[in-house]
Length: 147
Image (cartoon, rainbow, N blue to C red):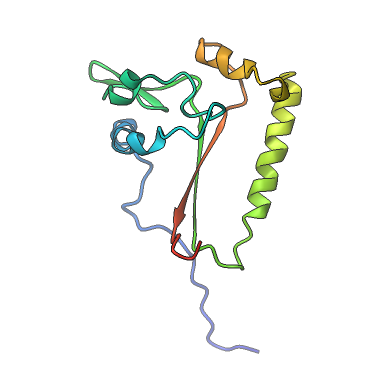
C-alpha cells in the first residue's frame, strides 16, 4: 500500500482558451500556402480552388472575412490535428481505420461512388450545397526525421 501518494490532474494553464475566430482566420491565412499543394485530381483540399482563392487574404478553407467580420464557411472541412513522434507505441492504424469507416459510411449515406471518377459530391459541395458530413482534413505534426 502506498502512503502519501498525491493525484496530479493534467489540466491546461488558466491562460489557455479557445482561439477567437479572427485568430483562427489569421492562422489559416498563414498556413494556407502549405495546405494547397495538390496531391492529384482527387485531392479534396485543392478541388475547385483557384489561384485567387489561395492569394485572397479574406478567405481560407475554413473562414471568410467580410469587412471586419469573420465567418466560418458553411461547407468547411473538419480539421483534425494530432502529433506523433512516429514511434512503434503510437498506433495510427486505429485513426486510419476509423477514417476509412467514416468515409465508407458517408459514401453509403450519400449514395456516392468514387469508383466512377466523377466525384459528384465534391462538385455539389463546391456549388454551395450543404451536407451534414464534412470532409476530413488531418494535420499530423511531429518529428519526421525517422520516416
